[in-house]
Length: 206
Image (cartoon, rainbow, N blue to C red; front, side, top):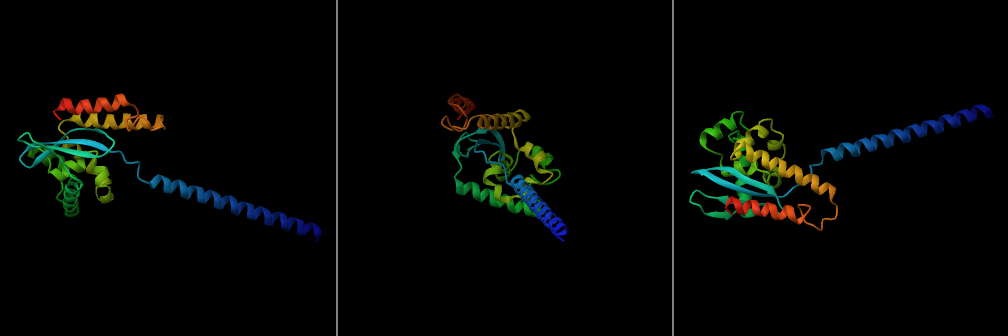
């Protein structure tokens, strides 16, 4: 009987151990899955949107910045920095278009329509830019998981080189930030990069 009891105790201990290991594994897996579903760290962006035709706009330049700013260059040569209220209003208006299927960002032929029209609406251009993922993040899956979005948003840029330059600048900035954890040298990782970005905008005409 003593022998049987020992076997029973060992079996019970082994069973509890398996349950604990299984529970910990499941918990770790759940935490991993939850971490993977968290949105990536937001990057601020300085964006220059140019009016290319009456009521039509394209992203002319953009790069990482300490704060998100959108500068609008109008056909008459004037410039203005959009306020948060103005951006929110434009994004909400565009969100309604996304819901009813009239936004060039989500229509199957949205890129073609934008190119033929000489550009996108201002709300569309904002959401096509890097800043769009920041100030329009509340739209969620309606836009950023839409299969047409990534293709159509390129039509919101002044040229393919403008789009590629933007993508590369954010990739480079992300890599720089990962290598530096001090943060004392600013968002760009070093003062030279920050100066270069400001000079880029000045040379553009800002």
